[in-house]
Length: 483
Image (cartoon, rainbow, N blue to C red; front, top):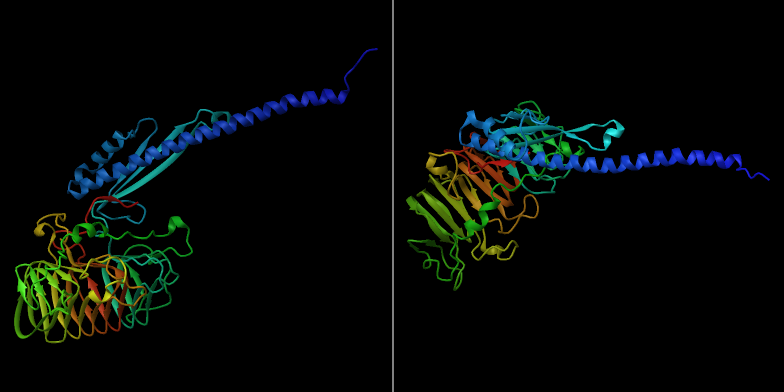
């Protein structure tokens, strides 16, 4: 008898062959997609490296005032990294200033954009012959000083930056607030902030108006303020880094903390001066100036810091190290002037980043109708475009390991307070503490950079920063990638 296959088996056998073919094609597509996308990602990373290097090369030319060679240098560096304009479908665009991003229009920045097409090996089966990608890099030859001069570094507090009660801050540069709180920045009660730009990682208090009319936040360029709360990550400002973090180790070597390093009680020698010794072996009270006449102070280490209660004080050029007592000027009979000086404020014993020894540390404190007019050393003596000495361009530098202010308004508190007239030219650096301009005080530092954990301007006070680059250049000037 003839044995025949059931018709349904024939149908199954006929169905398996095309199913296997489709499955094999899908498997090839998946493998191809994995291999090709891996190649695309590798090419993307190589292009990003080339763009970074090209932007840095262009910014270096800008930094050295060689405008005509910016594009040449950038293209050359891109070629060194394997990317040449017009070869293998690569296009390289160099913009100075940048035409997009946070540094759009910044004359000290160079933007490099690389477009490329990666040829696929397997995906043409699906009709995909090439995959296009674009990378971008921006480098700045005058970082931060060309964009920002006010840095509020606290990461998470409400009111980290506060301007209130008919006070004002006018900054012909950018302001950057790192706090990611919903109300990281609070400008209220008739206060006003005007700046080139205002960037806030978190949010800000809205609905306030300046006494003179207009919104409390006013910028000369772009969105005002730029803020991140509630926005996608790509549209949110990132936290700014501490612009002077790199100086800590070098500056710590300036302080001789040996037991016999201080002059005798209430005396001076060639190395500096001591205040009254609190107990045997130190520490010391502040070296005090209380005179109806004039007094000249000289650079050196001041064990116990400096307190000016009365008199016309001239500070000679150089570095003044406040070992454990801070720098205080108080009273309407106090007038302190000094050109080309830097004040380095530290603990009596080594600062350890905690509140230990808090009683042996004090702050910058100018109060009660005192008058100060102090300026930092210019970069390269005012004749160069970059700073070579650690404290060039820096007027007041607080040890970053000194005791920290836990909340806005809490001690340690650096203040310009109670009808003070202060002209402070140079960077004021208190990275882990509160900085306060208060009660009818005027801080008009014509060449200033303010770096603090918290910043407060309140009670009818005013601060204006007219020329943040400083004489001879800014202490923040360097060539670095910024985007």
